[in-house]
Length: 398
Image (tube, rainbow, N blue to C red; front, side, top):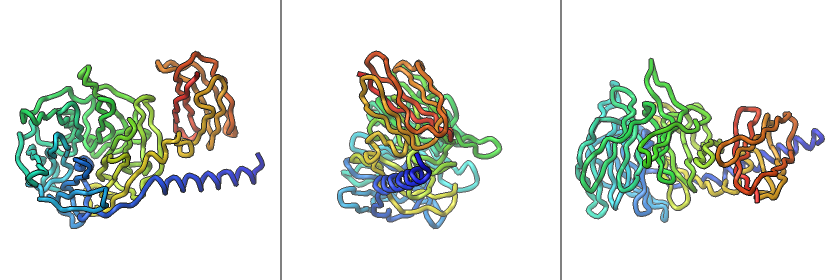
């Protein structure tokens, strides 16, 4: 390929990636209240998105409770929460919304964590107290599984490995298997009946962010480590689409991260339109809504912007952002791999996780043909790029 052709190729690649980034994100109606510290304080009930609490632009803690209607792109202000809290946790279950914990002061540390919890009933448009949590905490993460709310990690006097579940039918809390690590400011998502907890931080002479990820299997009742994020991140939020977890937040990196539990691998997508931490995120109607947040921990820079992320734009193999294309797939034997960036190695792994082939690459190689003379089945093709990023894709041999 001549130098002029190479230059034209990268200009075209930049145009394509910019176009996809624009299509993947869309601005929506601003929240009535600018705020941050709401990473686990957004949820969906009956098609509506609810956001609660946080710290507002005046630098104070708020008890504001607002609802967004995706059908009309409009917000409604609802009865305020009984407490003014930030970094609280909120989930919807069986027609009601449940809010648990959070911090009631901005200084001094540990910010007066509360163990109080309340439920909101849309039918009566009112709040009611529920059983207090076993321990006071904020900065936790929550998911709903099997008719119960699981509250994970967080902090009071320090980061916690605590894991409790709440049963609204009995209004009671149960202690569950603890995390393998203490985590505060983490995010959690439920995928295929398992709970994934990612990132966060602990305190050791200051805030130390984490890149590690772990999964809770209700079948075994245990947590175990899975593939780490490419970067350590705290103040992050996440949502699930098509059995993949999407993580939002710019601690050390502005890119959206995608986790595929089938491959146990992470991929970097495009940057967020607003480089924010401590924002809220929910999935609704095949889209992911990201709202609020700010750039610096415990500051007054919270925003009221909300953007809608469409992972479906990237679902056609997401080849541009992942820097490679594979064809044909499925294949009977040979596949052609096109790389849009320098790479060091290509490897093939079978579905059981055993690496069965490895091929070293030179930086200038962009087009590679690979023979897959293997039994029929699914294989994982992984490319190690020269910048250290690993990209994995499923290949079907028929």
